[in-house]
Amino acid sequence: MTPSQDLRSPAYIEIHIQAEAFKPGEELDRWCALSAGAGAVASFVGLVRDLNLGDPISSLHLEHYPGMTEKVLHTICEQACSRWLVSSLSVIHRFGDLLPSEPIVMVMASSAHRGNAFLACECVMDYLKTQAPFWKREQTQSGPRWVEARDADAKAAARWEKQP
Image 1 (cartoon, helix red, strand yellow):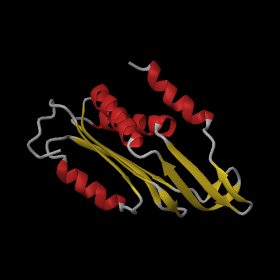
Image 2 (cartoon, rainbow, N blue to C red):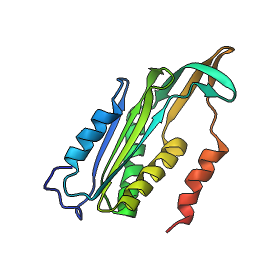
Image 3 (cartoon, one colour):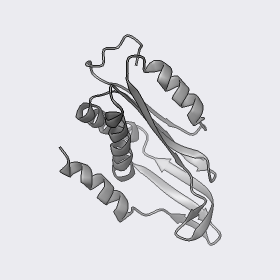
């Protein structure tokens, strides 16, 4: 978002799907500087787990469907922006090989009020987990395994369908 962007105009959306690591603090500083005129910025950072289903994880490999991934994320962000009057929204998501505790995803939302920014971040993450074409393969002591879809993620996304 440019400093002069009117908060009532169409939302500014950034989508970054990248192999390169990112630093959440630097990204948040950059986003706050771009969010002049907003009353709130909310963010979420997801990290690679070191334990899943009771097994230690030594690494995580993410694959995605280029072109389609960006399109799906942009649609999710557009819906969140219009639903909660969010002026701008950013999603950074990594692919490739990652190690435990590395940032894997970051969502940042700018809005006139904190509640809308928080809700937009949460909703984007819930839909990202269930709709975005990412595939995860964990490296465990027993060998590699694909991460299956979780019922909890589907339930989290479904609750947004019930809310106005």
